[in-house]
Amino acid sequence: MAITYRAALVLLASALVVGLLLPYRWAVAAAVGTVLVLVLADLMLAPSVRRLRFERSGPTAVRLGDAVDVTLFVTNPSGRRLRGLLRDAWPPSAGAVTQRHRIDVPGGERRKVTTTLCPTRRGDRHAYRVTVRALGPLGLAGRQGSHTVPWTVRALPPFHSRKHLPSRLARLRELDGRATVLVRGQGTEFDSLRDYVVGDDVRSIDWRATARRRSVVVRTWRPERDRHVLIVLDTGRTSAGRVGDGTRLDHALDAALLLAALATRAGDRVDLLAFDRMVRADVERAGPQDVLPRFTSAMATLEPELIETDHRGLVTAALLRAGHRSLVVLVTGLETAVVDEGLLPVLGPLLKRHEVVLASVADPRIGELAAGRGDAEAVYAAAAAEQARAERRRTVELLERRGVTVVDELPDRIAPALADTYLALKKAGRL
Image (cartoon, rainbow, N blue to C red; front, side, top):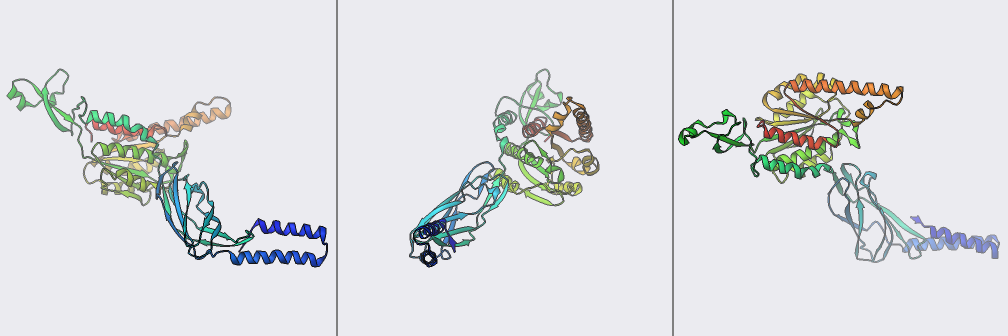
């Protein structure tokens, strides 16, 4: 049962009239009784909300920052007209623009109600419940009830780095031989023969063709296709740090999507592994058309875990998924203690079998603090920032001496920098 503001207004108006014209107790009791009778009559004439039937339709996925409309169909099987209010409740992070709707459904008919969602966080957003308040003909009172109408909308990563894809694809076309640029190097696919010119690597000379033609001939090569790229996301505590306008994991997801899109267009097979102390996401053997949809769906529910990453388990999981020589892209932090004590001691087997790239999101705040000189506090902060930068450089040098390619960039640069590193490795014939 629900009492509306109209009942309160009618009761107040009757009390004022009786108080001014008939200031007697029996008159007041009669006025209140009359209002109560009207409220009860209105309640009895209101249609039942328990018999209502509901159905949902609409998209089940949306990119973070975009809007999506979820439609709710309300069927009134009774013979009475349903007038009232409907509340389609969603969690706050679903970003429901309007959850309250006025409805008018004649008996035996169906109407639709549309709720616009604009999620503010990645992940699955579940509809909570639908509450309907059906009012009587006078609008004084009504019946109210709730129904569970399940629906889930998955908020996918926004993929802001998509804007860098056209320029990287143009460079990829050059490497693939669709433009005029061809490269030579170990581990690349044979393309064609041409005459030797000064500056060519003598190791590229084809001696048999040279003997047949009686002129020096060299082989030209193109980057290999159908290589394996394994992207490993560290979802441990270091990924929870906030840098720029998001967490390190948010920026890592964006960089991984750009690399996956680029490598897929290059003809390479791309897999995804998210790990801390257990596997959080695993995408293997996705077809070229399914890579981005499956990646974004798997990434949508990833959240940083406030636990220390098991680096030995991470390396073991990566080795199990990379059977032959692959490019393993490890997106993790560059904290000195974590790398020295956790990652470096177990990195050997991975480096022995695969090409390893370590990508890390740098904190722009460190650079801002290092430039401060306003007062004593700013000077101390600058000294601490410089020390942090020095430790980070030392960590990068340790990794590079072990044969790891390190990409250490600010949040807005990490995605294109990682894509450029992939292209550079492909050009050098290291994939």
